[in-house]
Length: 209
Image (cartoon, helix red, strand yellow):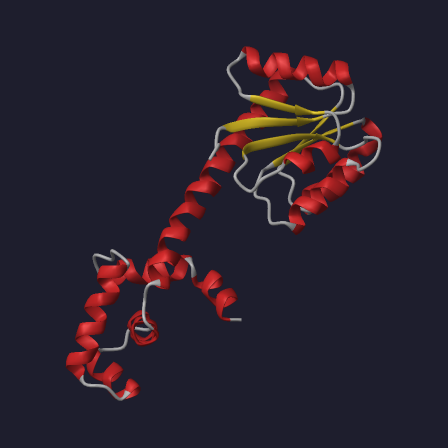
């Protein structure tokens, strides 16, 4: 699985695209360049890491249309739009749709580099968080239905005796389930378990919906 962080440049102007690629590679960035939004979309995978430097106005699918398609497939790649002066209202709208920033043509190289570095950092933070969530969700997926019931009451702060009454099981059985919950989730304390649960609560709700 290739998860190398790259700057994905999507720009229809050959000279601009080549110049940007050379500049980025000269300072150590890995770059993948595309001449159209369609070409990028064909190559896109959920494992792509880094960020996208995306021109707004291009023949065929424009940058904002590509952004909408990526949003539809839950891409987390940060997008930096490159815009002409007249495209600023479009860029603002793109920011409202989740783009992390935009630069106006003609742009200063350092300004663009700063934004790219920020976007690359954001992507790494997002992926670290996502990876941790997947570990937690994986552990919760190993819980039996009864263990999940016990976990739910644990994070609500219920004592073993109360859990036993609510689930109509013995207090000893609660203790066994409780120990298994902590073991399967690698939780070292109740507080740790609660923080883990809260970090994935929305994901669990979506699974149960």
